Length: 258
Image (tube, rainbow, N blue to C red; front, side, top):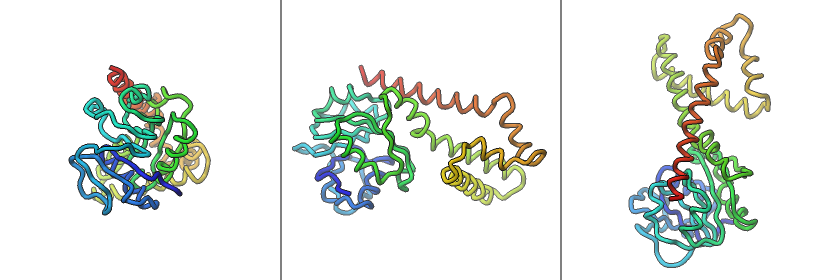
């Protein structure tokens, strides 16, 4: 894998830091990477750290600041601009930076393990190749057909880990409520979700089919599924959750347009 000769990473919080470490683990030379973040700390050895941008134009500029910080950014130049800012559209990015091409990306936090999801859109053929090279070490990388689908992607895979953690917490608390020690209930919940997800990925079967395989007629799983399935309670809850996240993504996009 051939990484770009120069990468500027503007913003190195949880997501920016996770991407940085995966790039280096995949073979990127730390000396080719410059982090622009006045609060950055505990960065990999060899990475250049600046509190504000220097002179010049990198081959790739990766924006990983908060969307609300966009207007405080100087008008930087780059061959390819890759932005992970939720809700900030390509047109808004192109108007604020001097870039040869703009690519939007939406990664999620499991990229820190190389098991994330990254959705991409925009750019010409060369920019798409650069974006794929940088995102490949992070997990599953897929291009979406329309930029407007980023609101859905943000809600599903971008915010999704947060929703899964809430489910894990509830599952563990439920187990503790039935008498298990809290720490053991959490270990069981995490391992159960991890194993179930791995099986879903490996089997290729729809989740509904896998659920039915677990649920024997008149058994314990069926009794629990009857609660989740009653009046489509779970489906309605998840739909409302994703809808709220998608609407917030759309609001951020409207704010970035000015």
